[in-house]
Length: 403
Image (cartoon, rainbow, N blue to C red; front, side):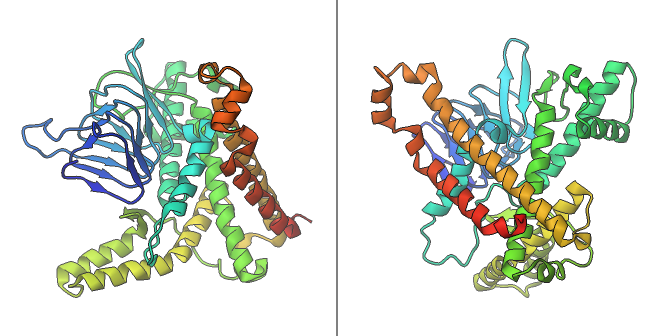
């Protein structure tokens, strides 16, 4: 490991994995044999690799500098010979050697790997044994950084979908027209989407095709998760305030979906971070104690910042103003929140159940009883039981709003 900056909650397997001139933003899992770039691709050693939290390159993955990855990018085994810029969070990146194309499945984790995603968020909180937790480290997979990335991803999916539609029609259009058409098709889940071959641009420094898999489902998953995030923060604010009216009185005024930067695992609004940098340059902040005090102030302010971001995100994705919401509207949103959470709980169990039904996993055991004895029964899985218990508790706690 050389010249790399690694944020909290990083796992790296076996000595044949290495990093060189990399920024890995935490909650990461580096598989054995992963070669995470070289900074000698140009005529000077100036290359870098940047990866958002949740970075997960598979066995023997080889990447090239410069490359950049959105949060929770999983990369399938293979040699990636060209620079990559993957702005779609929760994606699976793979190569199709038969067609010599790069494949991206956005929102892969939501659709096919919820067990690993939910457990990733839980285990790092559980393993955080710091005595002083003044600095708030964000481990939730739904947070300002990932939500902002999902908005970016939705816009790109809309543009690429629109481009595919115009290409199929044999006509051309500018970027705005493509995005507008793509958004219309995706919002209405138009039947023509099934016949479109959607390709991405700007993701790989090569001339080969970059194919987007399950673009429609990904767009829908991003939208659902943004709503879940917004409604979840709204519910927490109402519970803290005691009544919907008290909470709603604080939601007046214009809400802005600010950009946040991951600073060592702590999410800080860009504007505040730039102020700190400016103060350091001016000399008004001139000691580590001053910097640490800034981190502490930001940690204390983060719950409010996150709520404001979540409310602005809800407005952007729903077209509703939170200031106009009535208590009856809130009850509908609570029901939607619990419906999504119930579905996610089922997905968590279903993704883990694949390990019990896969024939190639089962062939190592003489029978089901032996398999259950070695790896435990699915119905006894502690994490799944914990998730079900938490969901049941949420339903009991929020049933007042469902009456």
